[in-house]
Image 1 (cartoon, rainbow, N blue to C red):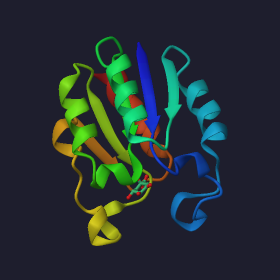
Image 2 (image 1 turned 90 degrees about the horizontal axis):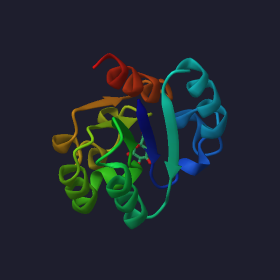
Image 3 (image 1 turned 180 degrees about the vertical axis):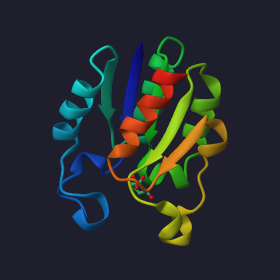
Image 4 (image 1 turned 90 degrees about the vertical axis):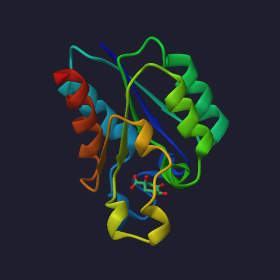
Length: 139
Ligand code: DQA
């Protein structure tokens, strides 16, 4: 089983960025722990601050991988283009958010991506990535 985690803009700063919202752990550190929790699953990771690069990645893996766990960051709330990319591929996508976007600013309450995704997990900290992978594992 092959799963790709995609992180969007500013998520390269996890551990340094607003730690009261996003925690103190870097994604690289978390990713090592995550991979060891799923020894039988091939888990890849991609991060970009660029909308087009995220779309290219969805196209690249979106007909062969078993699942994508996507935290599109702020593009969640703005990007019809990423929404179209999710709709264009056959690989199912789970949308995740580290913070509880519904308890934050109003502009974070709407997702252009959610309707194209199989589900959404938000507000549980970095554990949302593990839960996204669990979904694909148990499917
Ligand atoms: C986020 C929530 C978004 O609103 C924000 O723009 C992010 C991170 C989260 O993981 O909680 O960059 O997707």
